[in-house]
Image (cartoon, rainbow, N blue to C red; front, side, top):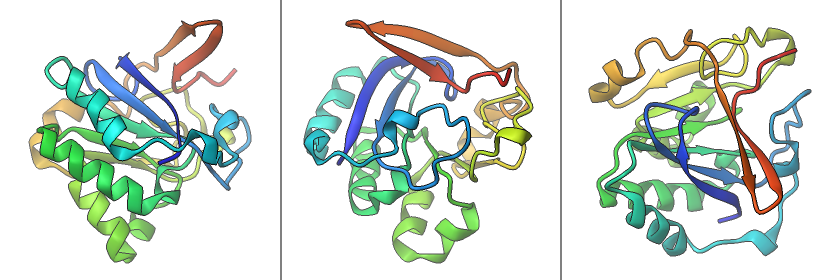
Length: 184
């Protein structure tokens, strides 16, 4: 699976201390995207699912959940299904995926519907810069938070309108901004 980075702890993309996984590849190229460096596919960054889940295993007792974002995770549907299945086997059910596809589009195809059904939550919809209201874990007002796993309803209550936060990480001279940036 083409992955740019895996990071723990992420405190801004979902509930609690999470592991964040950023996929590579996105055809949307949204205006003022928070991760334009992830638009182009890069086969040199292909990481075996077993390597990714090995990292998750090391942190499973410390993490409150996994956030998968990108890029566009659903552009690698076979790998994403395998990853989500293995995360669930590890015992983590709070899997939040950010996607530019609509919930309805994902529900139309058996493969992507199966992924959705295994998730804890999904933030759907293309980012529209003009609709960025600087609130919550969604990038723009048109996006929607779907809590799939009913046991997580309380955990995600208020996340759509909460104060937005971001983290700045210096990783060996590479600066990462984690979270949904505020619109200026």
